[in-house]
Length: 268
Figure 1 (cartoon, rainbow, N blue to C red):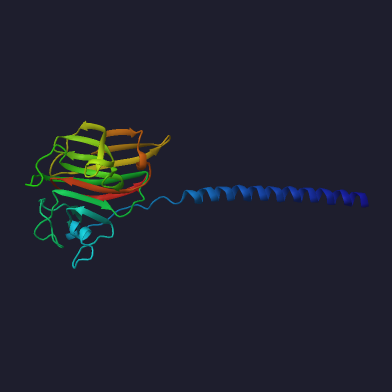
Figure 2 (cartoon, rainbow, N blue to C red):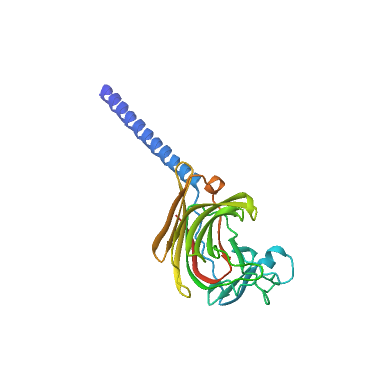
């Protein structure tokens, strides 16, 4: 009987050791997964700014005179040129002109040169969607007609000298994707056209626009544009440089009165 008890104890000890080893392996594997997942970090939250029924949201005056009495700052946007209003719950350029606005954009808007960027700069792989309405193409003494007059979306916006510009509406009827890098004649930067095509955009009608920027292997970025549910541009940038990293999003307008609503940026 003593021999049998010793054999039973040895078998139980061996089984217990095996169970402990299995538990340790499972814990280590789970811990490794947890560490890897934590290293990735959570994706950026959806960005869906709201606009008032009526009134100024922000303007260039607030950017260039941040401490001035009455300067209208937005928690969502910065604006180096032009004025952004709310109208019926949509964003609105106001009536474009070429004059400098005061704190309230009461007598002038300067929205012939409309430059609006998000304060957030954590948009990497992003799907930007909005409904856009073109009201009018204009000119001013300071801003004569240009082929690129229209509305453009900014992706991976690091600055006005470094970003992707996706032209949704242009005076010449083109849709275009451009990369802008620092250094050059265009407001301190240089544009490179990555893709272009002809596309119609009905005036005075709400049209859905969707632009995406997605990282690909080998340090490339894919940019797409859809209008009214139809893919009109799809291009891969093989030389994105600093634009391989996250940035802001935004809206640029040139000699254009326009409105936009349902502005939403989601991680891809």
